[in-house]
Image 1 (cartoon, rainbow, N blue to C red):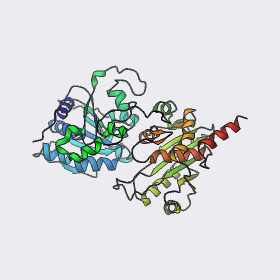
Image 2 (spheres, one colour):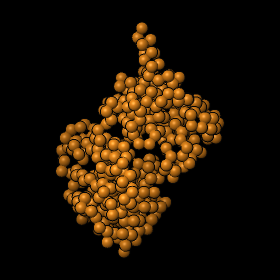
Image 3 (cartoon, rainbow, N blue to C red):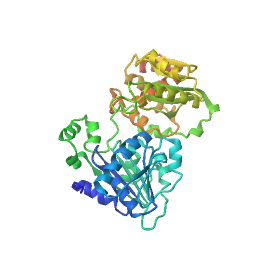
Image 4 (cartoon, one colour):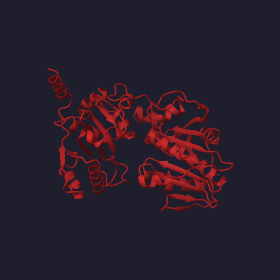
Length: 433
């Protein structure tokens, strides 16, 4: 028998409410995902032949977190008399009554097309802080299966990020994240908060104590489970990025004067090396109008042979002129890794002779002037950019996605000497003479 804390019990009851969309927000290891997966299994058991989708941004994370951890744990603790049969090749689990629970990632194009080609009576977006709103909207359109006695329900969970994140606008402010207009049906959106202290029966005291002593911004997110204001004095704001956003079709290939793929390497041994930073891989273009465009964020945590192929694939996909790679980590090893995947790809190595914030400031000015556009939504990259201040990077871990984007844009704006903000303003002054 599973027991819940008062906060978890309130969240559990909310999941059974009449609203169509429910968000559980809060700190890490608070039981949010367990509660929602439990609710989905309960719904599946009551609705023969029903379909339910659990989606994360990355497919490998969905399998590791849901398929191999949370779902089996929920079945063992809450539904021990029922057996799940995994159809791994097809990406779903089946209950004896014919109900199916699909698990997948929105970054797996082939699998996601297969999953989103169906209709569901339940959809769960897990770790929604990583999922762009555009992707969430597409997933929600598949909440359309009609099953007698089972209402259609969508669930979202996350560790809160900035107050401008779409989950806070939608479930907190009750505003449309795109138009910012008040929702016409606010009663259909509900939210509850649960935090690590609400799950203390299942966590080590030392773990909870470590969360309580995190730096303030991280403490608010992972321990207190609060949405936070953007950093004071941040070089980027979500509003500025949003204001200049465009669609990929708005920049046809004929309008692209130059294209690069930028690479910010790390020492990751593979995707399971969770203590290592990700490898930033960002494709960007400069238009014939002089503006620059972020085309794709292919960052990953993979072994060198894998990220080398990933960077080369992006190079060919976007018909890039070269791969720009930071030489500080690995030097010629980076070039060798890329050439192992394709020896004909030109590689331009750049050296970080200035700090991250100094390299970032000239690019943030270009954003402020409306000269940089994101051709789509890149949640992790944008979160990292908005965590930069003149004093440095204020986010968690390394700004791997942002570093790659800054290298790409620096190269495209022809500021590749690394001189930073002083050189940037000198050049700007000379152009105005």
